[in-house]
Image (cartoon, rainbow, N blue to C red):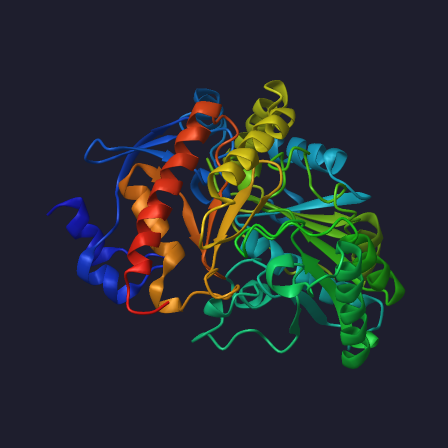
Length: 459
């Protein structure tokens, strides 16, 4: 039996059309990778313009990472962190994260993915408000197009309806408001400041309508990644933060994609005016070499839940693999590489080069509604520009077709789920020459799909 057939018969793939996959099998089976390049089992090479899923920041096949992981496996492959037990790399990493994170962070809770990290933080928010004798203050406000995970709770936080359909999500405590997406949400003629003020006022009106004594937290990515690489106006988060402070609502910053340098800063929250009470990190914490997430808790929140635990006893939450020594050792080496190679500062220059390349390649083309980005993140959104500006008929699957055609040509990008948008989020080690190939290849794929769309019966 071939690997393709074994996959078709046995693998249950995430975010995959299940019946179609059972018929045709996987798109590709990869066997190796180095830097920004992947190789499949047929020997075909691909430039990865999305760093896996926004996460392989130091690139594939880094030998320092391999050595650090191997050394930790040989030294101590596992021990748990229940009942106050600890292992060396996890303690070192927790201290390092507290010292480098924005806001007045006090403690770090380790998990395995961004999804479970956001789950953890919401449970902490509920525990916190119970401790303060506020049993009704439990609602969490998220944003449409936000991505916060796929567990029962975090899947509801995610503001993408395809993650809700068929799963009875979101839970009733989860609410959503509009995102700061200028293309579709901003009124014509409005300035960025006016747009931000409108969204902040809508949030305040929503909180008042729900009842301020029922709203516990607001969760947001500094830049909405899977939702479309949506970069907010500079005024947006400072105005949002004022509303939250007014009604004693906690701010959860989801830095799963933006944390550890992708925006040209170690964390994006300070740049966008966010002062988090709680923060989620994952993906780039290990450059995806080993699964790991971290939920960072501010001193303000920690002091309350620590005192409350005197009443309840043992804090009843955790995972077998929380603070796994191999994962935390990988994270320590990953952070060393990022800092020693000055990759964060390098992303400012590479990011500017990427966004300029994307803009020059796409801005003046029909069917391109907008190019945008920040740091080493960029996106192109497609729409029917022949009729003013309106979304394509979903049946055309414009973005999906562009991504598939790009892969056929040797570049991996991703069609984002909320609209016809393809994203660029390459490894930090990407070269300018590789960026040129990525952008030009996706442009060529786009031009082919555009012509096919024009020849179809109707847009």
